[in-house]
Length: 324
Length: 187
Image (tube, rainbow over all chains, first blue to last red; front, side, top):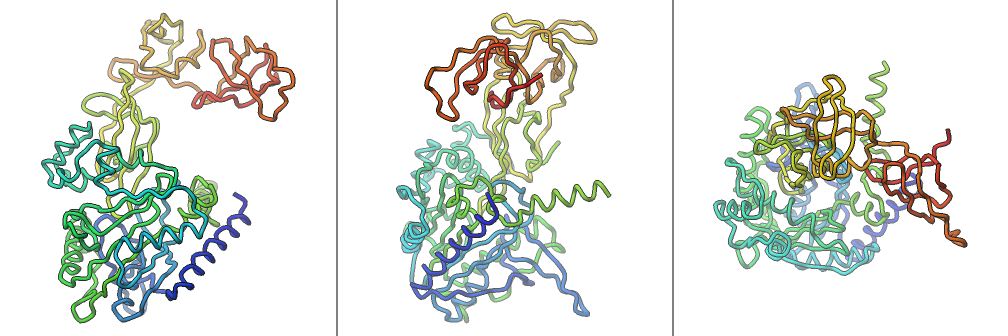
């Protein structure tokens, strides 16, 4: 795509998003990107750097603005949104992945995941996303596309049998979550309907996240939005219980330490949403702006909608190094 | 051994003792979840297709393959017959293994044959090959829509969709991955 077209398309979409939230009295905020103690997440690798100020302090680029947006909500900010540059290390460059991307995140007080779903549909329509909206539970998606009974496969032995029955490989050391993800990515995701926005709701609570439970505690109050088979947004009815938030942080921190070793694991946040500063009841949505721009402009790869694609910068540098 | 995240298209993996060619690969990383490489694999011995999703942090075994030059002689229905360029040994490869590759090969031409243990399991052909058009129907009169195409047959029997100006005896370049016409070649 012509770079001038890309500039205009991105400006138009950003303006549309700002107008949408400003009309509804959400405040636009800016939170830090460079911090000493991010929320640990076992599957996310961080970019790290050093702040040299006489002493040196290790700092990390945040993979999402969740940490500080939640601190603001706990401090009484009211409904907020942020366009947050976000950074994830260790991902291959590809049509749908880049280590630096823009995440739109917004929080609505007093809301659950289903309220956020309605608001998200309004936002998509206003930005020009067309096509019928489909909403299905993860259980329905597994039944329809994998022929697997997810509700009966919430323990590892049953999940292993179901995966083997569906012809998937099952490694001895693989956890329930590994097997769930393999079935989702191999059998379900490639077969999802592609004609309009698709919301998959009620993820298994067995996947550790900061989502609260739905009324049936086996399922989290959570959904993900797919457009054209690509994951665009993730939403939680947020967990507000300080004890369960602390347990999540500790569990993820332990997993990261087991993976990276004690010395290389970033420190966990202290007193995050503690009983003295609890998170009010709310629902948050994180939406990949670059992927949405891709969809709205008909682009086939993130590099087409990026003004300065990292893949091109790296290729140019490698060429330069080779010639030198 | 290779990391799941380093799997590339064209690599041969060893799965349950069988060699598989990586036909498609895609990096997938859910916002909340581990990173995987989603692969479409083709069994190099019988052509059956397998879909595997491998964690990028897991290791996979690579099949120990090697190449030899061989001349393609002829096809007898279910088998393609070759002759090794060094030893003059003759051997055959089942059509099911070569699948689409077979239809692009030209008799008498030398190709690189991929070997695993003592079995030939594939043939590497150029991405683009020039063929002579052996049969091109006349364009339908009045059909002047831009981008109009017709089907022609080339010397090897392969059918290709081409622009309507292509005539019998023309040389055309064809993409062997997609089967699509690339351009007319003027010599």
